[in-house]
Image (cartoon, rainbow, N blue to C red; front, side):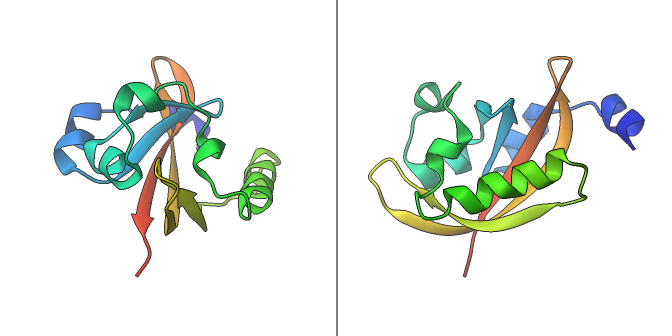
Length: 118
């Protein structure tokens, strides 16, 4: 429930130790990224901070991903999707994306795990 999610304490240090490719996104903007995600996409943390998460989605997939978020905003229970992300050097990587609602600095956000397919 929303009440439970609001009480969830987000532990970034534990996530960083886990070394899963993941980002924290609040209102569409990347707030934090794990070293594994930075390595996957080829960006430095400072380059990704406050960057729009959609800017990492390939142009061909963008409308599908935006529709996913619109459906989610309408209250549909959706935990993830498959898409293609674009690395800094413009390589395309097919991925599975899983979203987990969290509270980040007192505000709603998503912890997004990004796993390479295959």
